[in-house]
Amino acid sequence: MAALKPSVGRLLPGSSILFLCDMQEKFRYVAYFPQIVSVAARMLKVARMLEVPAVLTEQYPKGLGATVPELGAEGLRPFPKTSLSMVPVVRQELDSRPQLRSVLLCGIEAQACIMNTALDLLDRGLQVHVVVDACSARNQVERLLALARMRQSGAFLSTSEGLILQLLGDATHPRFKEIQEIIKKPVPDTGLLGLFQGQNHLFQ
Image (cartoon, rainbow, N blue to C red; front, side, top):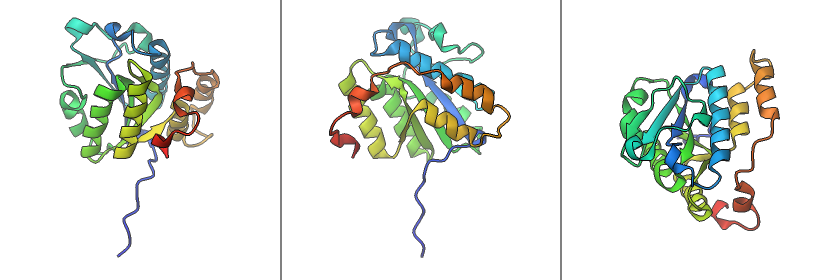
């Protein structure tokens, strides 16, 4: 019997969804918060151009505030939650998309709602693509260990530009030039070089 071919994590717009997790006013203290939101906003802009659906959550908005306006999420209805995972409140969204295969995951905090969301999605048999330059935590140790933990569990770690180019797929795409202009603009430093430099055995 032939061995089951492992997933290589390919992305197609028609079978993908963008998750935007808890980028709210009271979380502005999170490391690299403005930069993370800027990259997530770029992901959302491209998702809209490629007709990739997006889902937005807010953790206890009564106490932690609304989604920050910089995200550019106007038109998205936020799902309020108290769970440390997006999945319980967006389950109906997932169930209504039988073609869904891949989830692109942005937001905070890496060691809490991002990791628990990733694990819940993996349990459902979905591929999870963590947008590493659009996820953060209060400190870099939590961020580093959370990324390593998600990778151990089967999530893919990718940059925003890498994922955008996967979704585009071909330079003949009718929106290629528009999106090319977006990714030509340098992304802000989100502290990733400090996580990956040197002999980091967590990612070997």
